Length: 407
Image 1 (cartoon, helix red, strand yellow):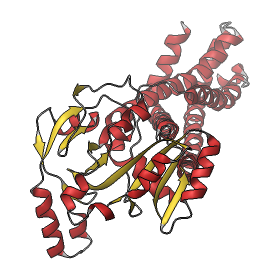
Image 2: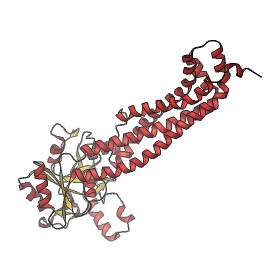
Image 3: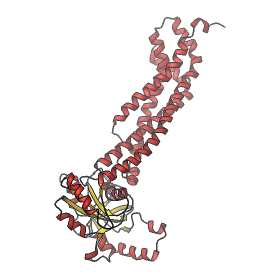
């Protein structure tokens, strides 16, 4: 009898228990793959999330909040700082380039960001051309990220009105003054944006933002004269690391202004998320142990059924290798099937959820990328399958074949 046919027949003999075993391995493997995808997306996002802008200036408050709002378009800005700071920074010998940013409005829940067009060349290089159209150049012109263009079906020439706040309707939900809100919204409804360009996929949070001229906020919100204009943050590319320290020290001493090392603030966010991922990994390890236990119980339950089969194989002279392979092969086959299905399910789950994950967290899931951690998953799962199969196999093999046929 061929070994593969024997193992397959034995597995099909107990369909329900075999399916449960495969399902437990599948769920565990899928969970591990999805966690690996999220972890990889987090690392890549942290690595290229802020580009060359090693220093960020904003209003006093949380450094992580400032970094998240400025580079990942998540959460609210810490406040405003004087626009006049930009001219001081541009004259500073330690500064290579600096760009002021204004945020606070949205279009269908996506942030509207005001920033000078030079930002894109500084961050992404001149080789990143527009996918369609041109760069904005005057008040009211906008370009949109690739994610927004595909999600909302925007095209060159489309017009729209923005809404006040980072999320439409947030102010009403928080119970702010409705009269002030209605006046503010009237200004927004009277201001029309025109799409003049669509960005190529940048694989950063900029893919889910609307970009326009810096002065849009002053035109929409009114009431800010040229002397007292404010911005939400200033992105700074220093000439040297020593220059970054000088900038942080100098401008961090201004009242109601903070200057942060962007990399440190982002690293703090990553560390917090890593702690949460660590807790999830504990749950995953428990799932792995449960899957191993399921394989073990499945094979132990089959031992009594297989003892006479094993005895017969030994009596007709089958080799030890054949018998051991038939005993361990079933557990390994169950493990391999569950592993393959689980890895496919994990990557498919990442693909199906990538839009939602990116929209709400800014993480890009490279759903069909094979990660280094998957080699460890494969080796570990197969190892657990072999170990779980060895005990029952040894138990069945050690039984005296003649004793099994006594009545």
